[in-house]
Amino acid sequence: MAVRARRRTRLARAAVAWRHGGEAALATLDGAHMPSPEAEAAACHQLRTVRLPERSAPPRIRRNRGRLQLTGEGVELRWGPDERWYPYRKDRGQWWAAGPPAHDAAEALRGTFAAG
Image (cartoon, rainbow, N blue to C red; front, side, top):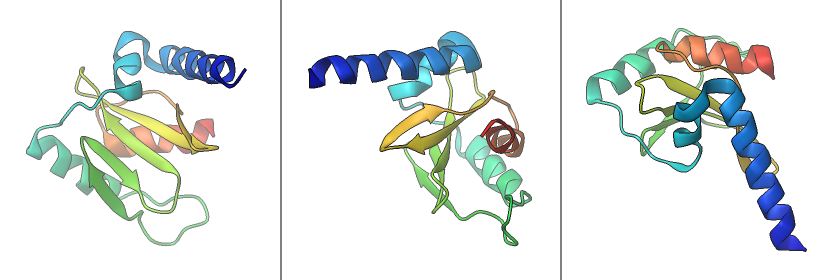
């Protein structure tokens, strides 16, 4: 029974990713794509300009295998094979696609909070 539940969750996560970005979004679901150092640095700079709802300071960022995790927010941006950032939210221990991808990391992040 637990195997079926995991399969249904996996399928649901894949369907959500597909709706947000098609094949490239599916590739970000479990894959790790590495941005260039320049693209990652630009994204970190872009994210420093963002103010999250009910927060006065910009998000703290942790870099991890082509992903930029917003510390304490349950949100991360994943670099896709199409050189766009894909937003994800953590829900009950699983990462779910959470908005449309964007070339600009701050835009992808804003889409996450608008969708969430």
